[in-house]
Length: 112
Length: 115
Image (cartoon, rainbow over all chains, first blue to last red; front, side, top):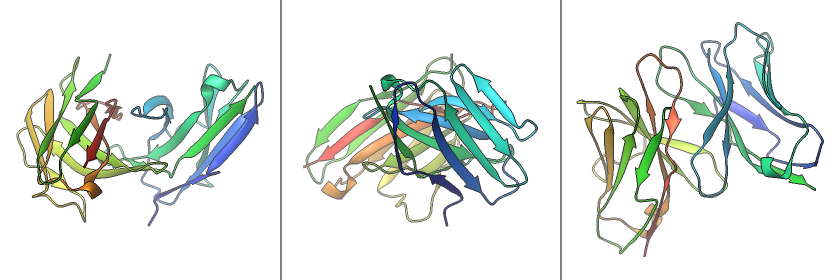
């Protein structure tokens, strides 16, 4: 059973536009929600992460919005650039556990 | 900070041979290390979790005799793929976590091709 559901599977955005990727979870014990960026042939790199005590976190052009009641969180990439073209994974974990549960990934293409 | 390295970055081996992949935390002590496998255009699949000095905990469906994991020190874990077959060809990624952190820090991955 997929613990974290991610959508869309792929996304094409024009340069300067906003990219939005959504994730949903069921386990209310999750309390840590990171987003990763992965380029082909490379390992995932942490972009930004949020804890459920806040509804939004912003770092540069990247923002996480978190809706605890809906059990959903999303990544917004403002002013998307061609260099942002990569695969993005959301994940969820508990503070007491080791395991990260990853979403299925979103392939983002930003066209000039 | 929190840099994880993997060696080699890519390896080609013949069917039936064994290959070892190293994962090192370069600037922190990793109390827990994780090994993932990733197929093209798919998500990361956790294979096993290891704590320093303890036996690894394997996920369901992962053959522990085929994928040998050793977490010998707080900065080094190794994954040995024994008697490799073409279906073991994949991208293997390790990650490491230190005790007080929520985060897992990922290595750059190792591309294994078995011919």
